[in-house]
Length: 263
Image (cartoon, rainbow, N blue to C red; front, top):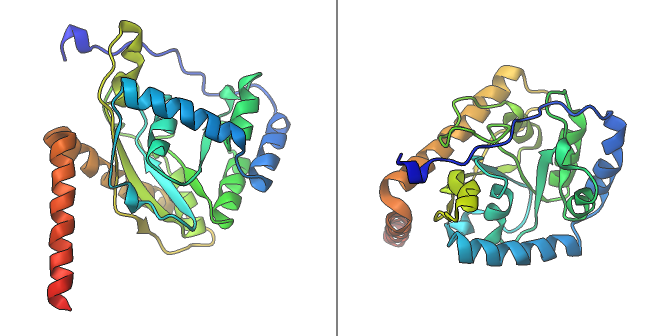
């Protein structure tokens, strides 16, 4: 990596929120009972223009995301912009699980009205899972990061958290592994460096529903999901966005040909 490509420094992470869980009850209550409102569309419109103009964002295979029913989007995580990048090319409204430290005035108003709900990192936060599972139970779409937080190295994290495995097993929802390539350099905007960002949506996968999964089962599913992300990310890194788009088109043509021949 050349000097001009060095990553801008990230702020020191604060993993524990000193506020009591009761502070966040109102955000969970809203998340469980109400859909995103005007705030979601306003932010989406602004961020879409920003993403397309400055980061020349491109989505690949967005039709892999089911248009209805419960869906978990599982992207890698480099940047605060990842929340927005994954939603630009989707018709569905995505509900985001975000660290509780972001819920401060006045931003918390936009977050809660935009469908975001908090998770208290460093705590056994069942409230976040109850909210996510309630949204999915109503046929919603929830985004959750396998890594649990942003990678600070510019590379995919080596550590995968079991949380997404728990959510997938307890709900039986479709999981769409999603690779975001280029967003590790988004914070270089302060140097007037705007990287190309590509989002590729993988084939949806589903795991048999388990009432009370063990920690080992949750971890195994999380690893399987993240391995699918690694494959997508590695292909984008090797082929680039154009090469990957061509591969997807070729694979789909071949699948249609096989289907026609079988008929």
